[in-house]
View: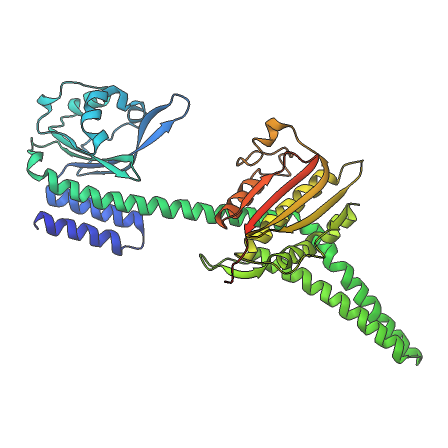
Amino acid sequence: MNFLSLINEMNRVLLNTSDLEVGLDRCLKLLATELRLDCVLIDKNFLNEETNRIYVENIYEWKVSDEIKRVDDELLSSFSYEDIYEIFSNTLAIGKPLFRNSMSEVVNQTKIGDFFMDNGLKSFFIAPIYFNSTHWGNLSLFDYKEERNWSEIEDELMLAVGILSSFFKNMETRDLFGQELCSNHAAKMATLGEMASGIAHEINNPLFVINGYASKIDSAIERGILDVHELKNISQMIQRHCKRVTSIISGLRLISRKSKLDELEVRNFKEIIESTIDISKERIRLAGIELINKMDNIDDISIECHPEQISQVIVNLLNNSYDSLSTRQAERWISLEMVELEDRVIFSLTDSGERIASEIAKKIMQPFFTTKDSDKGTGLGLSISKEIILKHGGNFYLDEHCENMRFIIELPKLDFE
């Protein structure tokens, strides 16, 4: 197989294998077999935030036999590009490969270099893997049997590295996207979990009333005193409470459903908020917290959104207010307001809690930062809420000028013109 055919086959394997790790393994074994290599490594660069130094970790290793010693993880992690700064700055840092046809050419040795030489390495080829203007890691090819003139196939090998760069970029994008979905789903389920007892009250109360009216009808029938007007009143009360249950279930479906990626819906912002409030209303009332809705005079305002994500943000804010106020001895209220501007709509949720200190306000949107007890909060609600609103082209922030706790959501209005 000539090198061009090899590169085409590597590309085909990576593109057509559903399991990315299996595809990578097949691709690199193909490269090793065709070039008769003894060892193939892929190392990824990481930043040690404590020392502010780059170190490497092995994420793939293939050896032709067990006689070739594996690179010790501790030895690999202790290696730093600072050790070979001059060589690095002239080669890998500018996207060129670092290779030696013979180990006798190696002058600047490191502990890891000594390891390879002590184990009989004859020559090596190290190519940097770049994407997003970042030196992601390296592909390393080793020959323990004989010295090799790597310069003869340098250009072809760098083409292969280009394919691997695209592969790792796609793989990391997929992993990050998957993590984001998992984080959002976990936060969503945590939100519903926090509301579970309140939801039970929300649904049980109207069901209790419906059951009571049904029993009243049965009793009237048994006694033969069924009055048409009374029956009509009972029917209206049952319908009202059925609508209440339907509204609660609609709100639950809104927040718990899976969103279709990139498929935004045109929805009434006020309607989303009020449907979401229905889920938490009874829980808030039972805690003795007054819910003040100042949106009655607001007209319908259409936004383009993932409604379940907007609902998740509103529930997060209501949960935070509930947690803050439920044990408070002073006045307890939550106020909801909406203001329509020319190009956007501003929604604010204010509660009677006192304004937090500025040093806490600066951190409050950071992931995993929380002022709640460990069993009550993960510190993800506000950071995920901010991310959701930003992805909708809006803004989400704490109003530090308000004397109470106030969060602001700004979203662009839908322009029908």
